[in-house]
Length: 253
Image 1 (cartoon, one colour):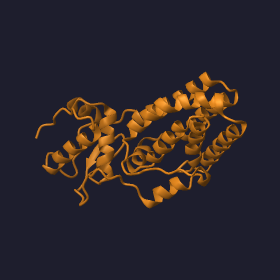
Image 2 (cartoon, rainbow, N blue to C red):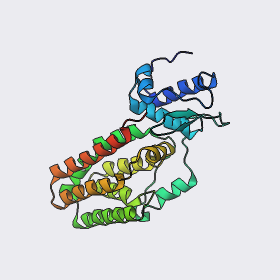
Image 3 (cartoon, one colour):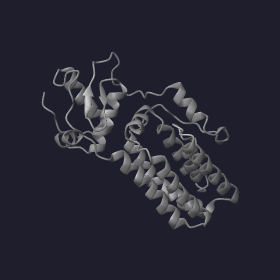
Image 4 (tube, rainbow, N blue to C red):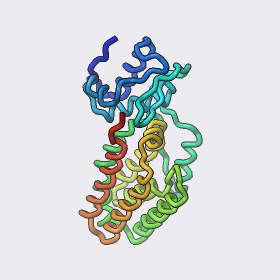
């Protein structure tokens, strides 16, 4: 069965389904390696980010093992199959719900957003929310954003795996924008950040210094907000999210 160019808008699902069919047909038996990410992207006519999401989706259901820097290994086929249902454990839900009870966040986990689509959406929304927060935040809201930054700093020192301060920092900025739609969207998107696919992406591609890079970038956002400099807040938030996307997109074998 030859690999076919993908033209469906749900790219990562279509890529994953095609690769699953190739694995099931014996084209790639257990113990073999799938073609390199770069090669698959070229054969399929898609971006490497979409291929990476497909590999993560296949790993979530146990069909492959992603070995960063050493390819993707085909595993013995599990009983479980790919479906449209998200993989969200109660523990993950609890981690999200525990982040800050006073926020009253309600997140719909009925469908998992692909990681790079989520990051791209945040990249469009959050710089503008930060610019608005610089103009509209009350002193109390600015204080809350600083407390969230300090919590993020403590999380880093304690080697947190869930980084509640990071999420709280972004949510409080959106809440301080004065536009409740921004707050609602960011709360929803950050809930999906802790879906199974995003967690796997983080596990494989987060660099050791990424939390401290983010801390430095968060500080630049915070200082711009406290100066009431909307343009600087926008630029700092955009730079931060660009860096996150760059790290998760960096090349592998």
